[in-house]
Length: 176
Image (cartoon, rainbow, N blue to C red; front, side, top):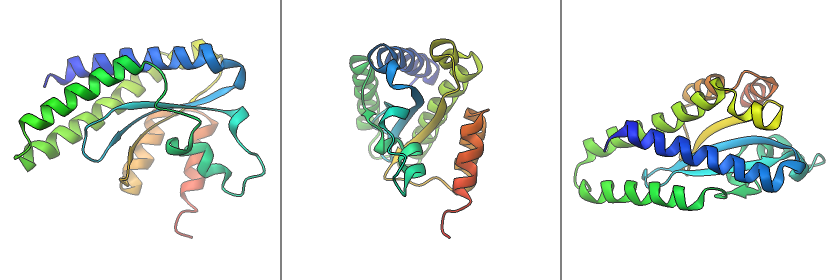
């Protein structure tokens, strides 16, 4: 698989998804955008959340604020584009299903591609130009936990804003 082409497809789909979400839900104060995959590297999907959807009285507010699996607009936006990406991923996986070493490399490259796309969009001010504000960005994987330092690195590379500080402070409370 040509990962440069895949990255371009993911970037196009991410932009399209965010624009669709902003068009439909911009008045709800979008504050976050994520790309996420699964442990089997079969999917790439977007997620978006809005400040309006957060319950400020919730004891687990930070969890709901920063966990894409809990966001209101999960797997919404650029559906056809992301479905095409997922079909390509599954096809590639089917062709190489017997090779564990190949799979580990493939999964790492996919996850890296998603992070690099988000980082590129952040560096281009894509989200700020649309919303006029900072957006929390994250890449995550369902049913999989990154090493704490790896997750910290993802948060730091994708966020130069108040969300980064709050997320890192929240991380410090994990396991306490």
